[in-house]
Image 1 (cartoon, rainbow, N blue to C red):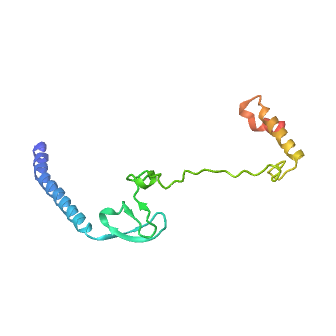
Image 2: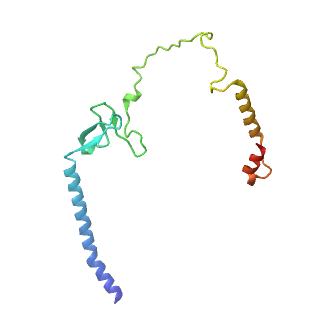
Image 3: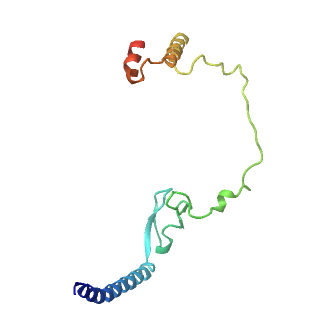
Length: 148
């Protein structure tokens, strides 16, 4: 008897759920159809300029202000191939290097602002600390303080 009640309840509830699901899908499709007829405001990733584009092109458009393509996938990469990035025709084949004679720029003894003696002292400290090995790893910090 209990099974009959559950079965009759399921038989009466299932068509209602199916009809509700179909109605939801139809309303959703109508919304998308109507929404796609209107423009959406988007913001350029490069120049921060707002512009309106068709709804279906919200993730694939070229900014009229800076002419940059705005369309990215979930990883942040472009969502299509940008052929202008692959075009090497505008790159000049000329390569040159202007070297300065060494006597114009004498080498600095140190670029960190300390004198040679201070730099040597610092190097020795770092070298000694690199050689430190604690007797017991669990007391590393305490032994290091004593070592210093």
